[in-house]
Structure formats: structure tokens, C-alpha cells
Length: 116
Length: 113
Image 1 (cartoon, chains in turn yellow, blue):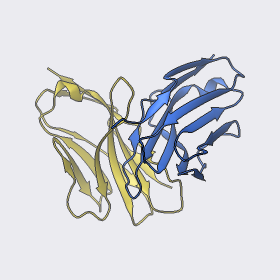
Image 2 (cartoon, rainbow over the protein chains, first blue to last red):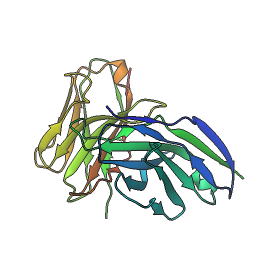
Image 3 (cartoon, rainbow over the protein chains, first blue to last red):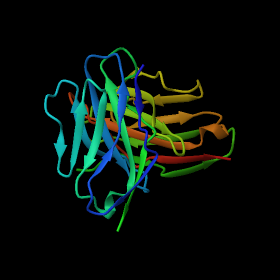
């Protein structure tokens, strides 16, 4: 079974500061993928960034980077220079390669609020 | 191009009523997924299609839930004899062949009274 843990239910951050959202995972699969999604109040899940378990370098997409520490089983999302539009729910998710469910396993999310 | 679309966006049903939720994936996407998101929670996997084949339905909560994708494009999630605990947002996602990333639609918010 796979499990995602997000320990920060909510975070308040000043605009333009960097933000780190925590995510730890548990899986017995050797090959897996890790994802971060943003869900604004409108409800749509917006894909942000992907990290494969065999990728040697941390993934980056614009202001988003994924701090992947395989030995610690952590996949933290870093948002540089936060903006007011970054206020939303953020979900960490994973998909394994084993014989379990083919869908993504999500964490409970972190509600990020950017303050001016 | 167009993203994943879902209809209706909102649905109110009386307990015991049957509902059908539609998902139009991104054109050409082979894989299609359905998720259920309860209020304040992360989405939970329901079922997965590759083309028209339903390869995984391990997340469907009961035999009242049924999904189909007969021609390998549009999918319908049907819930029979709805119960109050079925109230949630139902999200559909699709992904192209050989890619991991899933692209989500706006969801259908179902309220069962």
C-alpha cells in the first residue's frame, strides 16, 4: 500500500518569500512517480511538477522545484518568490509501479495563504 | 488544445435517485481516471481505463458505482440509488500514452439530499 503524508494543514506566508511544502511518502515499489498539484478555490486540480524515482536531478518547473530525498522518502515542494495567486490547496501525490491501484494516491493537502 | 471537460458541473440529487456524470478527456489521451474528493480531503482513486478497457476498479466504493468508456474516449460514471455519503466532487483525469502526468477536469460537485 502507498501512503502520502502532508503534515502542514495550513501555512501563512508573506508575498515574495520562498515557501516549502512538506511531503513524505511510503511505498514498497522500486519505481514510482511523485507529483504536486495545486487546487484553487475553483476546484480544478492543476499539475505543477513531476519527479520520477530514478531521476537523479531534482525536478524544476519555473518557480516550482521538488526537493527529492529518496533515502528520507520525502518530496517537498519549493515555491520561490511567492505571489498572491499562489494561494490555494496543494496536494502531493504518488503513483507506483506495483500491482496495486493504478491511480494516484494523494495526501490530505496543505492550504497555503499568501499575505500581501 | 481543449482540456478535460466534465458535465454537469453541479448536480443535486434526491436520495435514491440515479445519476450519470460525464467526462470528455483530452483528445488522443489513452488513459482515463475517476476520483472522488470529499470535502476537505485529497482525491481518492475510483477507477482506471486504458482506451475502452477498464483495467482497475478497485476504488469503487460499492456495486452502486459503475463506470464505462465504450468507445475509448468519453466516459460516464454512474451512481445508482444515491446515498448522502456519495456527496462529493467527482474528478476525471486523462493522460497520454507513455506519460505519467494526469490532467484533471474541473470536477462535478454532487450533493445528495
